[in-house]
Amino acid sequence: MSFNTISVIGLGYIGLPTAAMFASRKKKVIGVDVNQRAVDTINRGEIHIVEPDLDMIVHAAVTEGYLKAVLTPEPADAFLIAVPTPFLPVQMEGDIPQPDLKYIEAAANAIAPMLKKGDLVILESTSPVGATEQMAEWLAAARPDLTFPQAAGDNADVNVAHCPERVLPGHVVRELVENDRVIGGMTAKCSARAVELYKTFVQGECVITNARTAEMAKLTENSCRDVQIAFANELSIICDKLDIDVWELISLANRHPRINILQPGPGVGGHCIAVDPWFIVSKTPNEAKLIHTARKVNDAKPEWVINKVKIAIADFLQANPEKTAKDVTIACYGLAFKPDIDDLRESPALNITKKIAEMHAGKVIAVEPNIKELPVVNTALRLVSFEEAEKMADVHLLLVDHKEFKKESFGGNCLIDTKGIW
Image (cartoon, rainbow, N blue to C red; front, side):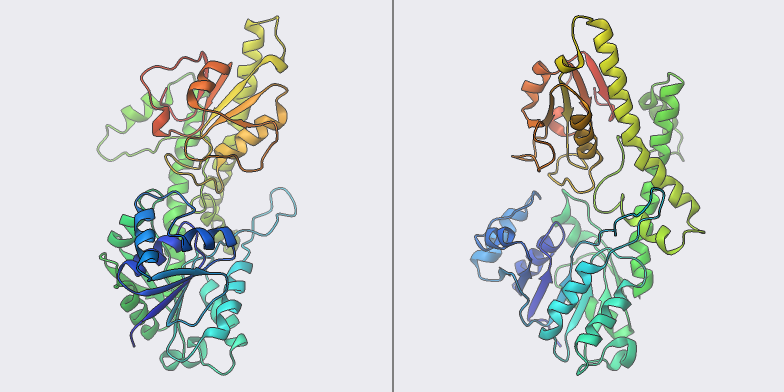
């Protein structure tokens, strides 16, 4: 059975590039999103996110009639679900965050009326172990006239698989094509059909496993990264206390042929590394001790950075006794969760800037070259250019190492550099 029409549910940082790649191979693609602005933007042949090369692919796909965006699902042969998987509100401090699958459930219920015999449903959203099976149960409940793999195995009317995305923002277009793909079908036939679909554009190897292992593979990759970053962040705090340059130390240690310490920063952000480890911890809280500790180390780093800002303000006022805190302007450089993108999801830089704006009596300005306007975070916070901030501010806080910030000399005096580029 071929896939003539493909539907992608969720047109964000993963869904839109995935839809565009299928459309670039002359497949009819129907993108679905609840955001009217995103739908309208895409249907004009434009994009609502920052991702290199994606704008040209989307423009060509829309112009040639292979890609369209809609608000509600339409019939297709394959449905890819790429919606967010947030957490439920934490009731008490110290509680382990629990995943909220409401968007996956809503997507399943939205596509259920469109399903027919022979269709394939793939969950791409990063999810806790068992989410794909849960999605299949929701689909079965909504469509009792069809059979699904949990009951009918390889003879099911509808095939279901989990195929997590494994791409780096800023390199999504290339990595979608070149990276290996983990294919976790609920049955062997589900896996085989998912491989057939992805081979439309994937040049990397499609590695087959089961749905649960595929879910855990993505969580494991990001949890490993989180643990490594936690080591670097903890090392930076230790070195600060011992008056050691952590950047020089890491450079020296990494000269050992079997050592590769990552670079510390103000915390860990994004919708993957800062989130995925909690999916493991929530399922196995008594066993995931190291992963849990790493999460706590990285989540605590922003508060440490804020305390460094408080110390810098005090030092500035001591050196300028004629001034008060209201006279001190703080510039925060970078709001995205990583360099050279516009993605603010789970960004420690944004959260640090918000908290500084809330606590500080004077002006707080932000420099983020990848966005045109600030999200609604604080009415007193103002977005300015790098040059303005360099001249205006008394305290300079570097949070993200965007390429625009990398310069040989910096005019500011009171510097807090969480990325080691100044």
